[in-house]
Image (cartoon, rainbow over all chains, first blue to last red; front, side):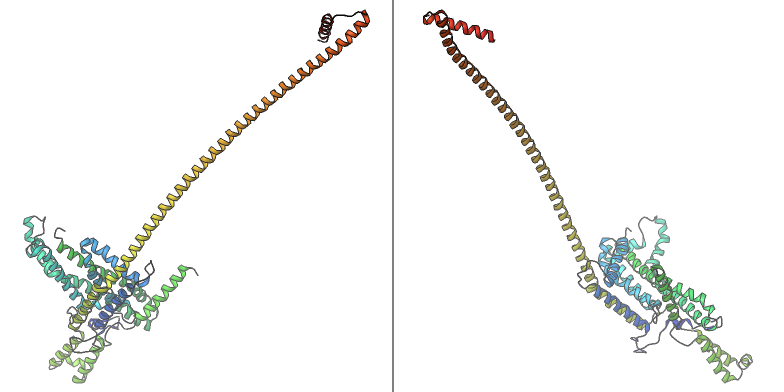
Length: 255
Length: 241
């Protein structure tokens, strides 16, 4: 772990935060939990403020954020993956998008500097929730037999290929999907946080010792900060659109 | 300072601030692998004397203990296993947020959006209607203007025709008057001439009779006298031509 004679913290120390309250109980509150609660409260505040009646015809400020979010989810996610009948899932997908986004973006917020989704708790919880929802919707839309048949024996595939396709579909649709969904988000945020910490520690130590040596890692830190803002949005979007794709696939087997 | 330079300056300030803030420890614990290992090394050194003696026979147990301690410095709980408290709070926060968004958040914002869309639609319809009315009014005005122009032209034509007619009538009347006056003058002249001729004839006949009486000293009967006078007058008139 000794890199360029630097003392680098162990990886677990970058992600595990000690309890602040209720230590030793299942309700222990640490920094990660505070970020989750903060994301919930910020999203609530945005939509409460945006939903107030206004005289202005042009949306401004917070109102614009909430309306753009809903329109984005509706037009770019739901309409592209489920279709008009998917509009009833807009509140669910909007909630998911904003909650994940605000839990990610804390990665680059000064003095917080930690993406809560670099902890597995919320990604896996949401992924399991999505898994349950799309399976229930699939059974509801096609019946248990129809859903299993369409999922395991996709129409249009030559019968001989079912020998290969069916086991793959079984594993992919019913076993791997929730984990792939969760790990994609979690791993991206872990990697982003590691990169930022690496360049931050490097900048600090090289600044202390050489001043000039901190220029390159400092520049990289700035670049990576911008990049991680993009990643935060992108991962929230990917998680949301994949959820919509799974829901769309389970209620429209022909797709 | 142009806007672009201001933007660049602002970006530089923000970037500097980000570096300054990011450089603060972004990890949970101040303890590092190095410091943990150092602490363990000091403990082992206190126990066995020199660390180098760990390799010597008889110190296997101390070596194993030291190795385990070093492994413990590096080891950490698997980051992929979710923590129960974070599942409870994170999942709970999401569910609370989901209920809020379904109940209040999204419907309120969507309601505001629909209301605005409805207002825009109504305003656009009103604007279309107003435009259609304006076009109709303009068309009506144009038609009225064209009618007025045609009416004015007709009036002018009629006035002109009437004037022409009046002119012709006045001209004809003047000519008739002139002709009548000329005829009347001619008649008057003719009457005056006849009168003058008759007067002259009477006077001349008297003079001639008187003269003849004096010349011939004889009386003539009235019919012979008259025949003589007429013959003389005709002769005089033929001579005056």
